[in-house]
Length: 223
Length: 385
View 1 (cartoon, each protein chain N blue to C red):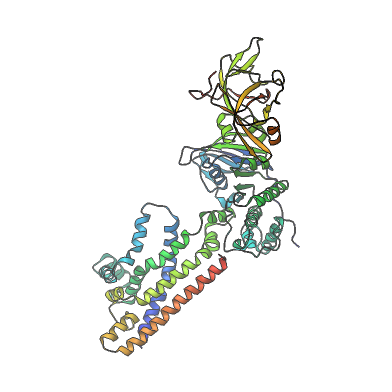
View 2: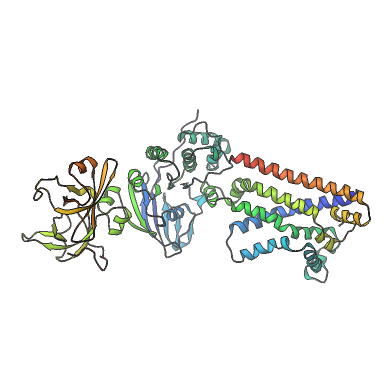
């Protein structure tokens, strides 16, 4: 069992969820409610990582993270570190790759809130933040949970993007999914089986939590 | 034991609305509603009723005009004044009630009690629920309530805010007939207790006539006429208003003078006596006129009609439809394509042998004839004298 790889995987998934939560809420709500020019283009860009081959996405991210590229250069100047082959690099890559998994369920959840509920809240005296906190968030809660679960599970299993950007540096960028591949390459099937079972267990727990939570909400609504 | 909630009002100044814009939703509406008054906005779908209600609530901003309520200016385009809905103190009952589905009835009302200290909100919400006769149902979610109960929660939520104006958007359209009657009765009782302007949007003319002090007829965003229902039904300002109010019996005629020198209204071969309005009109003037159904009187069969009542006219029954105790009769005439509609008790229709194709004589009561001389007539008239 490669414990450092498990720790990298869990840390990566947890941080990705934490950072994508506010971003996904803002983007999902904006795409659901706001009417602006370029909205479709914006939605398409968010969905792009979903249809791109992970190695292609990883390749472009690797290029962008390099110190010759403007973004990589800026990062290097600000932090004194490079993104490629570092944990920060795979975290950033993971944020991009998971954008659709976080944004789309949240966007769909906001789209199902009837517009007049928001208006009823305003007429009842609630300001925009109170309306978000007391009316909208409780109603999009199931969408939020599934966004987080999808992001978490997907990050645990991400292979191509992470490998391209991070390589497989022990304790830094080697995730459990990459470690499994390495074990198989080294003919250590028993190790690979153990780690696969571990990933299977975590994935199952995640999805069980989602179904449990959204099922309870449905029961509450009484439909 | 819940205490009686503090009912909103009274407010000074009432509600004054004057808004206009060319598009995207055309508006040209002017109306007011006094404290304690119930004004019904009536008109067909797409006449702008709901848009006007939303403009009052601050949910829709028209291009031009002014909205004032209770001495406050909520909207004035000329000085770019626009008060957000949160600051307007409006009680709005949405057509589908818009209850918050994740909150129980009590919490739905408590949302609107932000002006009270948190410790008092729960008790105040219970008092409001009791006021709309929902004692003991405060813990139910909207999905667990009937349509009528949901409407009451929405009403309690709207009133709990101590609004300066109560806005009702088709509040009875989503419930069954029996519940509707009961809720309408409750609204009639409630409004005696609250001294704020109430604006009711409805497409149901009977409902508007039964509940409202005044009606405002809207079409294409324009306010066409305002007044008590009885006035509107007897004296519509134009053929358009008559049509929107589902009134038939709009015809065209000409001002003439008979042999005795009396002014008369020439309608085909008939020279009609009119109590009011003919004196000031020039001879030969063509104009639209209207007669309420209730001012058509059927002559009894076999009786000589001439001289019995004013304005006897004879026509052919084109259609007679019996709807319960009343029969709806349509008379056709040789001289024009227009038809005369009136209602009569079914037993009276039977006694007089009214049937399709029969010739009958009716009187058009002179005081009921309403002239509309200021309305331009369309180019070609079906009814030519």
